Image (cartoon, rainbow over all chains, first blue to last red; front, side, top):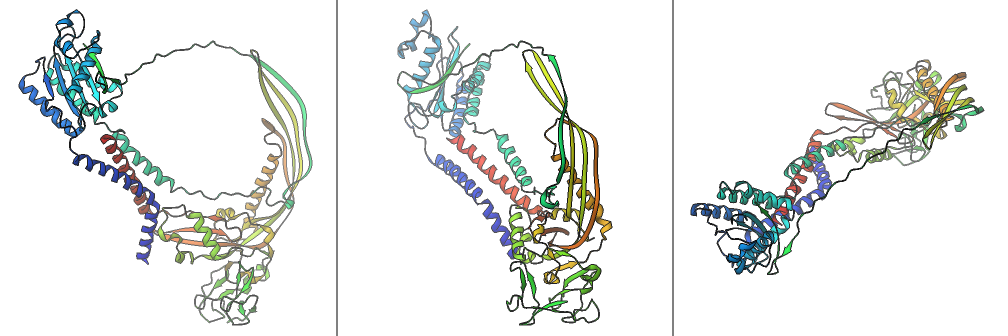
Length: 301
Length: 330
């Protein structure tokens, strides 16, 4: 008897949760399947250069470069995206562009600093064929930092999945602020913080973790309490239930009008005012000279 | 008295489904024969001589030795003779079904709460009731006001109209039921209402065969207060129904409920009783044997609550964590 009850309890339990179990199983299968296939799948773009830190401006010591390379390697493995840092010290704006090597080499057509920085960053990525999974439009980010006096500033170029994940200008800014904050005092620290922040922004999960912790607890509590409530029967006898023929015998019912009284009051009216709010707009994606799609933003100091 | 089958000698019982006497041993209908033999004491079964557990007010019971349904003559006759009875309309099987239907959403009830074995312990009981008749009359006068407001330009107007409200009506109440059993909780018996009096019949002991019953054990005077309370509440509701919604406010000038005639009668109403024991506690369920209305709250198994809520939590957490993982990878 006891055993039979236990079996019945289990049967009810499974029947009640079958949809839940199927859903959870599906998600688990997809998640684990993806994770496994991701770890098994090799890096798609073997043709890209191994170098990740190009210190043309020579602001880093060899040791610092090595440290950043190691940090990038770890981040790349985790994110499965390429991270490239390029520093240089050349003019891309104004009259002194005539002597600039990069302007010629990369055939930068613009006059504004921002435009040329963007074109240069995108072209550097495209020409070298960076991208984790595939060359050119593959996944990854490139930081281009110009140390030319009076033109100091950086551009962050994104590509592939990184472009989608960093479509929000605030996130791009958040990453570049790390460079802004530290470059003057300690360039190595600036780039190191940049990698960390990029890792954080690119590794973001779709739902904040506290929701993952709190929501299931809340729903479980609501579920537990909702299934416990039972609507108790109420006294539901019509007041006419015990009357002969179901209705009273009305001998007299009058509603006679006696008098009325009207009062009036003046209404004070205020004239209201309005307010207006300004808006802001973010950045979108663009195409580089080679036709690849990139995202990104610049910060000039 | 015992009702026995003319054909096989078995104990015939009243069957709600067949609306008549029925012999469960030989399937005969209407073959009952009343026997009034007695072995001198009401604690001895006249059928088998076994010992009966008869409580002070029991008027119908079942012999634990021979499973024979007995009706105690001296407790259904003379001063204890009921005038009316509503025979059971709901058989045991129908009653089980409606209990299962009502509590099927109670996921946290213990597993055996509605099991066949437990539900078979259900007992059909005829509960003694007093039925009160009252002839009443309302004499009511009040001042009702209606308020109307509107705005015109920069001026708000309020118009207050006053009316003279008078009501003169007779309300004849018939058969307000109040249970006459000390054992039955009053509020539960109130919740059993309403009963459909169209199916009320003159008392016949045959209807009792197959069920348990009590004679009245609270005199009419003792319970009349409850009937009067129901009567005044109903009268008040009816009166208010004639003017409520029409006025913004009503100021009573005169309000008299006169009772000019009253009487009472004794009768039996059918109730199914299911006492479920769980965790050292008794959970009582009462089912109206005529309409199937159920009163009672299902017990809750803490273990089940934890298991179910825990599973909900685990499944949701798993799904969300997977969404996080998938979102990060894509």
